[in-house]
Image (cartoon, rainbow, N blue to C red; front, side, top):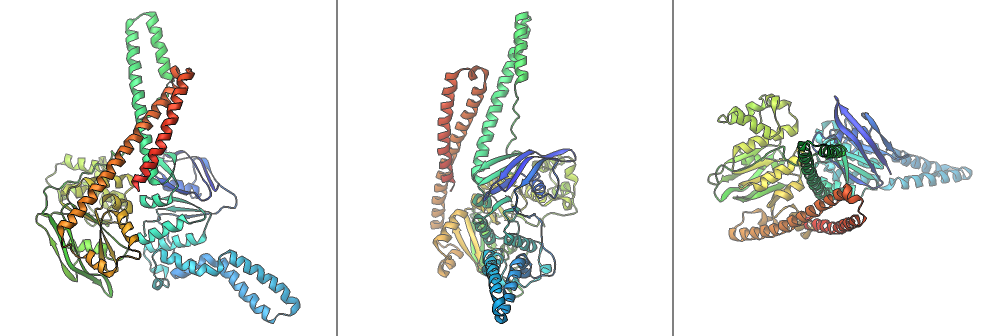
Length: 635
């Protein structure tokens, strides 16, 4: 074991954030800590690192084990180059190498009686150098920098000239090169593009130590985690498996808990009615029987009502009117900034009802394409053609559509003057802004709160063509799922830029990959895109690229292929739904059995107990098979 967290309690201003939180980290564990924004995830990490103290509880790190921690906003500083900043981690190896060179020089001129001692020293130094991977440390350092998205030309850049996100990437690189026994990362993917995230996934999967990750990137957690610690309403629950396995088990557990709660409430109401009836007889015998039932109810451990799932924020996206079948046509689009050419000769089309994601590395021009379509930037060449009756709704990752000096109430009322005060308040309440919150200025809001205001305005727009730039940035997992459901139910057309692969996989019917200054179209979701890329090896040939990036000439053939894909997807979703329903039924039955076995009438009946126990074991076997089937269908 590397780390033990035992009975941690923490409150701020007498408001509990963490209560009785316990879990442990074994060697090679890859653990995800999940929970909504404000659940206490970062607070827990800071307690583990000793940055703040717990009110109660104990954090124990095994002897001789090292921990490395990267906070959300950690960054490097100073005048070092990027390369030298990472090289500073390898000072011990560099010192060993310098001593080896020094001994080599001494050996050249040493007398025979001194030479023997120098050779022994050199052998010890060489062994230590090899054990520390000294002969490969430079290539390792270069590999980490390139994996995190830095080009060789950037290695010589001064750290002081970097953006905040780039400085965080340098700090992450230093931590990875330190190779502690336990790496703790708080939102490590925030400043990485898709290729860098994929590299980091592979690095952490093969890492010889343990890892704790706090992240809202569900695809990232799916690939890495073998354990999930959920922080919910101050409590911690540990689940084995990756994020998808956790989500299924969590929902099944919640359903079982809710069923048990309803059954207990029904029994309580029944007993109360019986007590009232017995008392109404007003006879000594009936009153004693009523008192006996009251005592039984007093001893009953009343179950808490499980928290409702995803019922707080309400997002419904629906066009006011339908657009024509041809929504967007982009022809021969090019854009250059100074000596940097982002893309050239891009052409593509969008049809009514398509949900299309643009993906690609940072700096390739994805957001610029959206800005050009929205007439917020001008192309160097090319034309944008919108179809008939197209009304655009725009979500900007920097929230430039918001006015920093306005209050939330003014932000809505100024853009939608026909809404009454009550309607404005109800809209904001649907996005978790209530009471005096509506009079806060936009500039006082967090990134996640600004995202919710932008979503509220998007919903009110009733647009039939949504253009979204990184819509899941700053949203917690629950809010992302609400947005996914809203987009999947949306009958209009969607074009968005995102690096959230789980979100893309859930919502995209087509992917446009912006790479090498050109677009390649893939009909399907993110998993299909990965399969196609793998099948193509290093990527599509220039001919395939040219064909895929150009507007489709045979519309009927494209729509037929899309319909076949959608039919196959619906069949898969139906099988998945049936599997989930079966899981819920068996979990509910097991919860009922547990209640029965703990009831006074059953616990003294050995034959009935054995019968119920046998049924539960059979159910568990079936559930294991259903979970395996669900995982297969989910893949």
